[in-house]
Image (cartoon, rainbow, N blue to C red):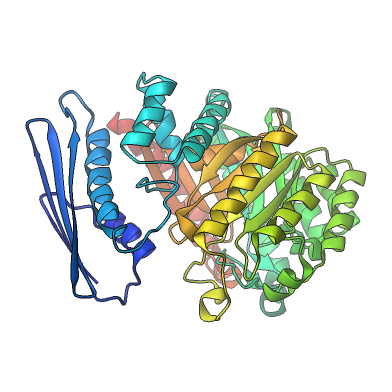
Length: 484
């Protein structure tokens, strides 16, 4: 692979779209020449593949005067990638539902265009003509952006969210790349980890009060938080209650995740501790797939846990499914979605299969769904969700996502997750605690990040540094304010 760009460079985006057409090991030469003059963009792309030459001479009329630098960059980048894709499609007919739109937040692009005064019709036109997004995906992005805005407009002044990372799992799923450790190895550190976490909660409370903030949302994720014992959960929840004003908390989510870690006692501790939203994730309702991806539960156990959560008093439940799991057909995915809908959860989140570097699935010969099948799965999801009254309200994409597609959260009215939108759209400061947490400090358009240690043992041994990182929050926020 050799990509040469002249006149304008967008190396990351070019490589992203290159991978949709070719393997990195393929002997392919790509040359791209960019020119902009007289309010006209011209990108000439030439691809040499298998001793043949394919080219595209792309033109786009664009007046950059009085346009912000961010928009100019997006238009220039889209022109380069579009010229490349047009040339590459003469070699391989790859379906691109999102056209040449890159980046993890398609709805953010839409929302920003709307905030600049563009009408819905104009935004739709930009998605179609500039990015070549399909009608289906354009409508999805616009609906998500509109629903996001409702939640973003209601972020409380001086509010923050808390994320608490519990980096333990009973086993590691085949596709997983999240921060977690197998409790068969790390379980011996659980007690001490929780003891340190309680101290980090105290320190975070001190910092939040010092900054004049209050907590609006709490999310306990991982890993699998319900890997913890009931007394661990009770200690964490009690410490949170003693440090923060729960009357101001809109949403408190516990990522229960894997059904094989859930017990009624844990659910009752969560409910008594103030949790008002819970996630129970089957990923698929096909038992043979669960075995392949090393999930230690069955569809029936998931259903039992779902009922258990209802019995414990939870009236806001999310369930996660993954489209494109190993060897799953479109019909198998449809079956999973239909089975979950029968349980009537308030939220259903559908993820597209994504193989990251840390996932064990990379090192297997497992067959994944083709991009066309993946898109059919997601199209079915959109139609079924609309039929049930659930609306798409948050969406993101990942670097190695199958078919360059998307992950979407659907919810009934009144049950859209504020935290999910806040973390995706970066409009609210999030203070992260526990293993692998990443604090995101937001001030206007500026963002600073502070990372906690991932491994439970490192978190314990270097806990003094964890507390110092909390003091850095004050320093960084003050610096951002001074720049204003």
